[in-house]
Length: 299
Image (cartoon, rainbow, N blue to C red; front, side, top):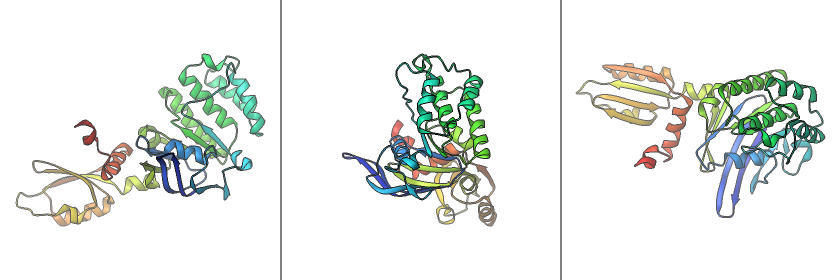
């Protein structure tokens, strides 16, 4: 388990992460969403022990990760911008990581290179962006670390490769105690694979919930009421967003479907429909509540 306790981090006058509390359960895929500049990459680097928190502490399996080589050996960090040694080949990088990660699986690395069509003897500087991303993920998987910290993991991968990586991650979780933490802007990719979602905004955490619970307790409702009806919807529902066009009301509410049905039946509308929300719609609704609204960007 990863425990993040009251963690803050500033770079001179810029507060990148502010007073974050999070718990990430082992063998769950944790998706870290966030607006631009929300602090996702900074938090990942602190979790991996690359950056020291300005305040607070990060515990991995009960031990502080900062300045703790034994704990760091359980973690593998995959940066958004991969770094490889000049003139190194994929096999050279495997040898390098194998000196630190003593359980590095060389036979599996060779097998995965073949499956992904990567030449292990070719210089990495001649690889495309997507190939470099694939290589960094394969190195992370074969290091056999317990925690895999991924910054924009799927960026630069084509759809076939993305699906291949997802399948391998799922298999690793099933077969050994792997806990991937994935920071991404690609909400649809996280929706497909993650068990738990954390939403960051301006260095803080807006919410942290299991994806299934999040979807069960947030819905879009479209409804029409009689012309003479006088109803205060804001008093009845936990409304995040409400729009009206003519008599048609569309609202995003933080309510279970069961509660919505009960309240709507009591109100006797002319028509109503309850629709599920995608992760992208949930992200937009939650961030609009705190002022991150697309209307302020385009007008």
